[in-house]
Image (tube, rainbow, N blue to C red; front, side, top):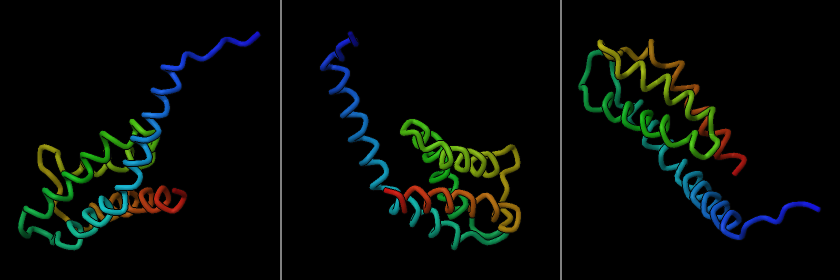
Length: 113
């Protein structure tokens, strides 16, 4: 005989899935914020859009893996690291590939949800 599942486990799993679906539902908005910050970034320009870009990447790097979205988390972590280093990167060309990877990971998840 198989072991019976504790109803509390099923309730917990349902709550986690609801949180995951809510998080995934917010991804288009997070993507839009990422793209808006990226568009505003210019080499050696105002630091504010770079900080917004880093903030979006940082939040995605921490929260996405909690919901099994490792590709988003990994790309977010790479971008966060570039933008948070001892000498944070502020050159569009140096960051472009990593931003594109994060956008692609977001797009893929949004498309399948």
